[in-house]
Length: 226
Image (cartoon, rainbow, N blue to C red):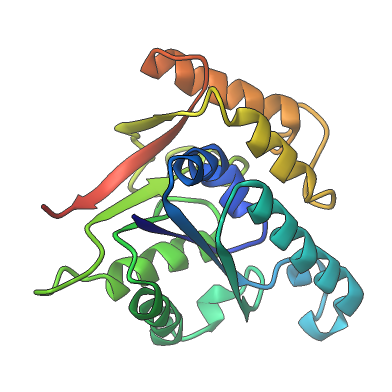
């Protein structure tokens, strides 16, 4: 089966579903990752002031990370970091539509719509728009994931709140998720930050305890067509 992961920023793919990607790849599925935003540039007063070498290094690290997780290919679109709301939604939708047409994925994993980060919400809206359930549509299942330091930091003040109802056992691939996240040195923070290795392990164990296994990633099933 072909599976597409659509995210806003470098590292979102690991944070949101890294363990699940690795497990699905091991099971013989074809995993593709699309990172729509460039990353990092929002940390500068002006986007054009961003360090070009830093951006290149970050994108190289993305390629390393998805390779660790077993993805077949990575697509990067270079939208402005944390400024997706300045881009016409139609332009973002067309990026997703093109990927779906080219890759023909049966399933998509993407951001939850109630996240604090504006780019995440735009990506969710674009995915939903690009995959409207028209007759003959390719995408059958769409899953939303949480991103530590964005989903929970909305404090359930942005609707809808994240209410997972699908859990993937990542007991055998949690170590790959942590290894992949280690590629993103500039994005990792020391504990107790949610993007620390310790916190990611704790989150996986927490969802594992909910689902009855040692470690899990949680998802909200947005839509399933049979």
